[in-house]
Length: 392
Ligand SMILES: Nc1nc2c(c(=O)[nH]1)N[C@H]1C(S)=C(S)[C@@H](COP(=O)(O)OP(=O)(O)OC[C@H]3O[C@@H](n4cnc5c(N)ncnc54)[C@H](O)[C@@H]3O)O[C@H]1N2
Ligand code: MOO
Image (tube, rainbow, N blue to C red):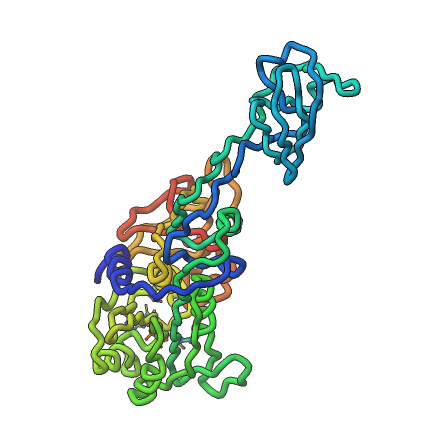
């Protein structure tokens, strides 16, 4: 069995970048730039006042001044500067040539057009042209665009951007026991939840899921499921990955020519994970236990989708103090469902007493996955451990 780190590297190695598409920036939140955006303008475009007040010359600050004009945002003053003068100015207005400072109106005494600077303590209150960004400057963050990014693109006067297309991810659940949500389960049947959960993770990662009809535990049915995934950017199967007589995903994939990257990893939950390439299309086979499927979805499918869009991967691990003693670990890296609580220097992390990989209710309650390396020794409460946050 390979390690989680090796498996992740192999999964990321399956990623092809998806094609780009041009979209208006008001639809670009959460998308990833496929080409750098190049600013069309310089910001501020001129030396701009940061305050409401008076534009003055520093050399004149001790003298009585006369107010000779007014500059407001969008209405520049076009007169000529002269010694011992000031121009009434408002925030965002272009500072007229010849003046090198704006004195806040709270710091002057004005009578008619006569003005005296009463307080010289503040700075120049001028935002220099190009202070924020310059025409021709490139913006190419290797991450999903945030609200601030959209604002920046707009300020750069860029109305449309080239982003990575949303990958199309086929999600294929299989099992004779499964019925879709809303259908009354017959004897021995359960409701299929994994495909919905994985589709939600896919959407969270910025891709479009295509939930395929549930396959039966026959080679023919699985083969038909695989065929209906053709044209997708990624196929994720769920279940049928283990060693039972009805676990046929690996066999069918191999018959269809899967170039297998790996099968089985030293991870708990999630041991029977498989991945490879079917022709051009990456395929990841998730284990059927609901918690195993979701944990593998977070650890492998979401980073793979990110990589397909050109997002730089980040492990996202944080530190916490254990709230309870833990026994020694086995030989697989363990991801324990846990609650987070406020702590003094670090958050406290409290793993749930049951770590059954079938218990979706505990997965839904968990704030975090506590990560324990293979063969981790017993740990007393108070030890510092790593965790992966599950919210935000
Ligand atoms: N002899 C062994 N048995 C098992 C091993 C092993 O090493 N040796 N590994 C166990 C582990 S670990 C896991 S994880 C599971 C994974 O098995 P499969 O990937 O083959 O999954 P299934 O057998 O199809 O299902 C397991 C479990 O999950 C339920 N399930 C499946 N799909 C869904 C779905 N879409 N929605 C909700 N629940 C689903 C299914 O009914 C089973 O209860 O194998 C262990 N066995
Ligand atoms: O690895 Mo299985 O995924 O423990 O339940």
